[in-house]
Length: 256
Image (cartoon, rainbow, N blue to C red; front, side, top):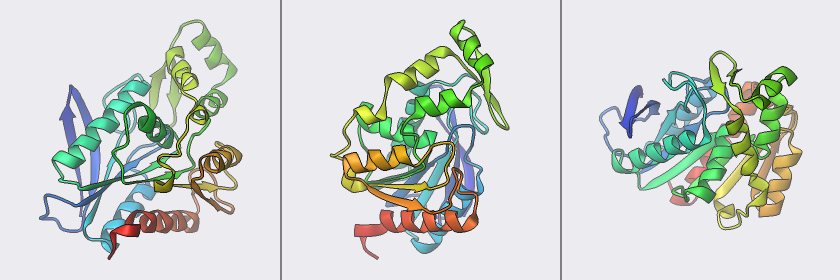
């Protein structure tokens, strides 16, 4: 079953997409949060494929995807890291309190993976296991490279710019400065390493594989390169492989 709902907390309305096997169930022992990358949304085919595969194979699991601020159907207009982390915290609390999750997992991509790694350091770790696909380890550099020289000049003058793909959002210099101030590679993740899996495409041009590979090696995190995969894992075979690896990683020691 798939359904949509909003989480209305702390003055925010977080747009959610939910997958479960039993339409009548109200609580779930295992809930996987699914977070998307910059400029994307909860509506990707990859999100649907992951949610459907997860709940069809393991009926005591549910998947909860949501839109980051300023993405998808979210009502906010100006992007900030602090609001993204607030959204993640609210959704975690909802999964535990309202869905009854005993075990909370997260599958995060790109910018979403950067936010997940930042959450572990700045907020704490509510997750049993964490899967990161094409994580934005060097998020500031990736975002800076995404901007034109004209956009960057406007930011330097204290002006806002519009960024994004299908949907545009506002960004100012403080957002970039926030990304630059939190460099993932300057933090240690040894305490979380056993419960993290990183999957990355060898043909990722947006976030080259070398950065995440080195991060994984430095923190003794399991790293799976997918030969020929690009940043969005557009090839269905690449996406299917990633989904299979992630679902089995999550299920792991919980047993059949």
